[in-house]
Image (cartoon, rainbow, N blue to C red; front, top):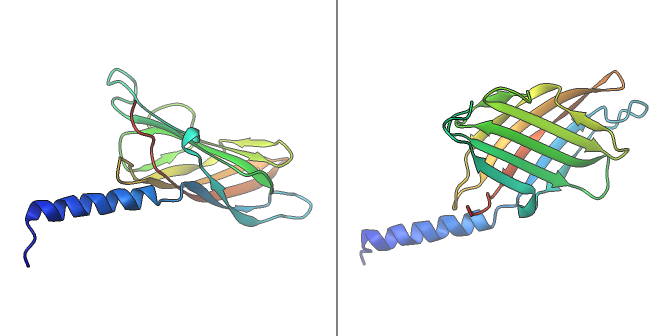
Length: 166
C-alpha cells in the first residue's frame, strides 16, 4: 500500500509536535566548590516552568540587529543551588562569552541556598538549537565566579519549549 506524500508529511509533523510537547523543560547542572568548608560538589535538575521562559525579537535598529533575546529560569525548593537564570541575545547558533553588554551577549545568575548570587564571571552560553513550535531550544553553559575568593564552577545544559508568540 502506498501512502501519498502529503499524508506522510502530515504524520511527520504530528509526530514532531508530539515530541516537542514531551520535552522536559529544565536546566541540568553540575557544580564544584559550593561550600568552602566542605567542598560541596554535585548535580541537579532545575525544572523550568513556561512562565519562567521569555523570548523577544530585537529590532534591526538594535545593536544586535534582528536577534532573539531569551531568558530561562529554573528553580529548586531545596539543595545548595536554588535558582539558575540564563539570559542571552543572539541571532545564530554559537558560543557567547559571559558579558552583560555587547552583541551577542549572555549572562548567568546562580542563587545559592544561603542567598548568595553568583553573577557573570568567566564562561559562556552555547546555543545548539533554536526552538520553534515543534522543536525545543537547547544549549549548554558554563560559569566560573568567585565566592569568597574561591572559584565556583557551574556548568550544564538547558532544554525548553518556547512559549507561543503573542
